[in-house]
Image (cartoon, rainbow, N blue to C red; front, top):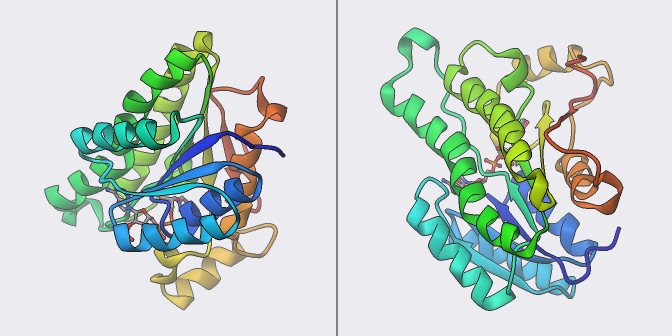
Length: 247
Ligand code: NDP
């Protein structure tokens, strides 16, 4: 795949799946913006990208704050001129059973996962509309399809992302902007490292391919969704989960 002269903005790009997506695009020739709440970690990933011979920009960007997102976008336009690909990857969990879930836990997850995705689409789509091209990829989750005990906030946020993907795809299609979502299953990152070994074993039994996914399994699908080969796909959610959820 060739992403020479393309600029990709990855939210939550400092570590985990976001970092793998950022490195994946850089290996294929794109210049990368690593946007994250954690500037120090974002700078580390940006340095790795520079070692691959690509331009990179580390930005401190809290996706829940629309003013900060716009400020970040202005910096990108100033330094790199455009955004061709937006990957809304920033996400958090704050699990609790429904009756015990606090307002703070609910709001925090909805704000980062769902509102953050909306904020970034709203800010970046404006410049994509002007250039009459763009690809937006939203990282959802199979939990947004199936639901999961203890994850009312997370499942609602990810289901919201799937619906938002469809609406954005319909609104932006006429401007040559494709919007799709990727719904990972169980991917080995720091987010899942905190689960108990017992739960992990139980989950593995439910995966037909009988193994956890890697961040690279998600990155490769994002590359596909940003490339020429997927130009006739929009509004879809691609499930990447070793076969756990089959439609
Ligand atoms: P990680 O927790 O490893 O990484 C998430 C990154 O997002 C971190 O760098 C984090 O910064 C950053 N971040 C958190 N809040 C914000 C914010 N407000 N603004 C900008 N950046 C922020 O998660 P994963 O890599 O595991 O997950 C990435 C995405 O994939 C998420 O959307 C997640 O829901 C989704 N996903 C993951 C699955 C998995 O099995 N791992 C399964 C299904 C979906 P900091 O380190 O400072 O918190």
